[in-house]
Image (cartoon, rainbow, N blue to C red; front, side, top):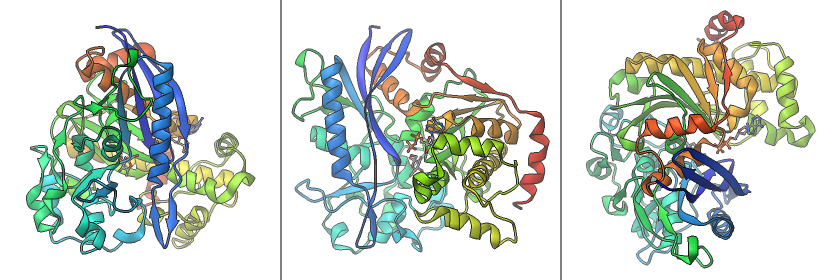
Length: 479
Ligand code: ADP
Ligand code: LRH
């Protein structure tokens, strides 16, 4: 194995980055090339992603990466479920709609929930692709559509001219059979969705095609292959969970918190469905068995509402660390917190509706959010272990939220388990490693890639503290 350089494009709901990664048998290192915002736009009552602006930032980031590093590959991951529709000529029909748009609020499909879960293993989230398409049935745009491409596949199509559907992200549509990992065409037909919309599946590690955009070339001017990675950002993040053994749980902590375990096979029981656990397709045939917990979105939306007046994230977290613990807790998973809007007011009215006092300062509000997240993690990790019959003796927190020391400690306390925090750029690392493996420069197994990460990363460790016992009382307040 030699050393390779690759570029990872990682688009999260709160921002994107292009990162150059260098990988050899005993090294993996990242260099940030560019970072850009991801601001949705509301127009005529619909919330859209600004997809062309994102594409321009991706192209320009790749151009800079190609100028600065001898690239052997590039790969794209992004948030799940959202898509663009192409007409018969391959042109984009309208702007991709944001999963937090209200168009799916009261949408149902003619497939019983139990049957849908038994085939797809996907938890009910109102914005799953299947419901977005059900909401669009009969619209001129969907009628004119010939191809549906999830966001990373759409960007890959623009870069290479090749259409396809990467399987880890395809699983989040609730239109993929999780057992056979093929499109669930019968479910599509029963939901009135045309199977012809869905292109052939591709696997992480497949070469999609050479990048055709001007000025984006590989080492020595050779064509740059775009390589399929775990294009669902959470799939890439889980690759880079630096676990040493099989008995671990993880929290991929960013805009969302994805809380769960890695399993060899899906759990498709009625109890699992009722507990809203999902079985997303992971790398190398693994299952990402997890629950979507509303993550730092709650805090991001508070910050957006407060503006700069409330101070920096650092000062809010310092204030939260000094605030009374466990005084205000909300159910972070309540769907009322899903759409964008005045988050502090929604939290106050949630508590008021239950006769509970509400935070009155940004520091208290921040503490309320973090305590509530830790409580939701405790619940999700207990459920994951019970429903899967597997045991976790450590919780890995990866993603931007792993930088939040207070949240890491609260998680250790609430879950009563040691927490290992980092890497913050897990998604980019997973993206880079899967490309490097396809190029023969990284270990061939997940365990091998994780062992390599452990030798290169500085991880932080948190032990449950003496205050752990208080969490049972805090949890009892939410029942
Ligand atoms: P996304 O899901 O949008 O890709 P990220 O993984 O980039 O999200 O995580 C973003 C979140 O990470 C921010 O909302 C913020 O709460 C948290 N975060 C980032 N940097 C820090 C930091 N230095 N200290 C504490 N929290 C941080
Ligand atoms: C996290 C994420 C998550 C999905 C949500 C839509 O970025 O991909 O796994 O459920 O966005």
